[in-house]
Image (cartoon, rainbow over all chains, first blue to last red; front, top):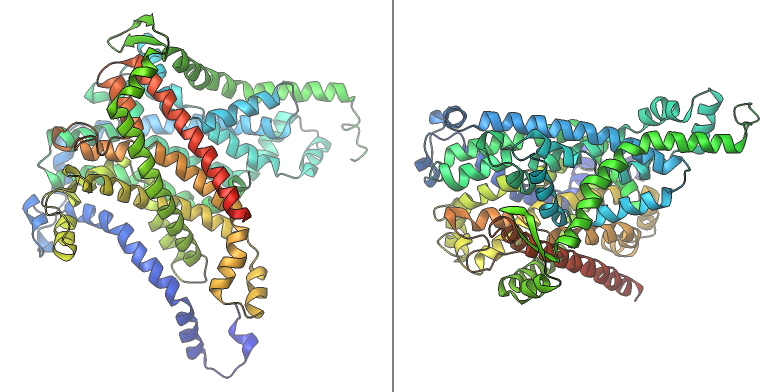
Length: 289
Length: 309
């Protein structure tokens, strides 16, 4: 794309702003229309969680004065959503923390160290990454039952603390590091493990941020496994609880349900906004692999 | 290599050091992957030949391929396979097209790019159960979208999720709405690795933006498109939460109305945890895996044929 200065100095800067705007008009149009379609359900949910009563949702004009946090107070008071939120935080933080450590270490070993059986392990990582997780519904369930782990945090956390995709992502990243870094590390007297912690880890922040976002989102939103691994309401995670609220207990309390939905949505949004800067770039490596 | 003394250490000793370091770094991951992914996957294969109930998983009976025959003869499973395939055929081309469109719009020097990027990604990072719950109200009997779409386009005036074919259409729309943002980000990463000079050179040569897109950008994006199509295929064949949440509203059976929104994964979930038939659920799971593998290969072959011509 040409910049104004290379073309000439005839037009005023104002004209150039107009030209540039016109050039980008199609892009703006696409983005605004798509943005409206994507945002609409979120805006409605937020609105529905603040209206005075469910009846307002059927009206087209509603007075904004009547908006309140009442439904948030009510849902926290009448359901165990506070407890579910806590469960989701405990489970997701534990899973993501363990994954970041273990996947990253494994990805480094697979990328930069030579050892017998490396090809086999790499094959298993790629194979399990491609495998649909639904295969594991029944066997994991029977394992958890036979260990007596039903309705425990162990059941919600331990089976999920490593992820082949995470290891693969890190391996793709570490493979690209220049060999000179290794040599420099060895000259400085760092062992293999010292090199991992002192040099490889600090430069891998973008890949780790990507892993953190994806693992947080996947596990925070996970529904199938938690819905069968815990049956007691006090052990529910948020998605399981939200399903129960919207499908059994509070079917007629739309505004309250939407308050619960908002509470479920906010944490993943915060995590994404915090880490998103590094996010796009990290996918370049995945697409190459 | 430099001639430092550390580098001059005997090669065998260095190799042994590498193997020891690899053991320390890899062992925790490998052991956990073996216990919680590899072993259960193998167990699923064995379980598919054994009959047992969730009520007492310890009592099992070897029945050979009987359970494969049973699920493959089940009209509900046939319908579920068909529905999943239909969902793939509808959702994958739509979301890939929209993702490409949005990524190109985002890859210009416009304002608020970060804002739009975040907005487009929001559906993907939102709990599918939460999305389903919201859609139940928006497309419910008194929902805002039901009313608007009815008065503007004459679409149904009552709940979409309780009538055919609107329930299925709604599932497909939600899938596209959810997935497009994710593939937009992947395309954006692909676009950003195309050097800006390529575009500048083309536009100096007088190529318009459509020609640039068709002749330069799309060919350069082929690896990204391959990834987007493969992931789209796999994900659309694994759909579970959204149709499950929509169809069970008001206590209806999963996949209702009829079996019109029943997907493959919903079928195996119901076999296992609604009807307690763990053996046939395992058989169904392996059929699902086979379908996914077959379609992943088929679309890769089709893509290669298409691009070559």
